Image 1 (cartoon, one colour):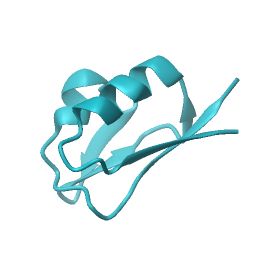
Image 2 (cartoon, rainbow, N blue to C red; image 1 turned 60 degrees about the horizontal axis):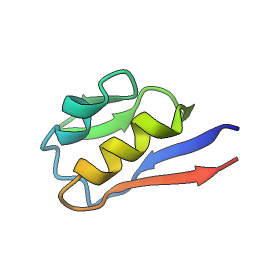
Image 3 (tube, one colour; image 1 turned 30 degrees about the horizontal axis):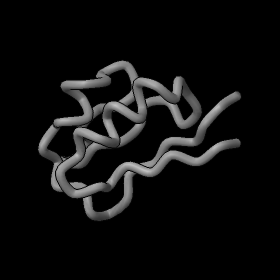
Image 4 (tube, rainbow, N blue to C red; image 1 turned 90 degrees about the horizontal axis):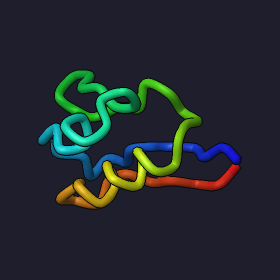
Length: 61
């Protein structure tokens, strides 16, 4: 099963998601952006849990 990963406007660019899951996330203009829009759920969940402002959203596709 695939999952759609997105980062909403609440992102503060702290990089916590990149520290946990750098294969999915990168910083662009001071904000986190997914490199892959559909990916491994386990890594994405770890990044979502690490986000201090809950800006990461995971949707089942």
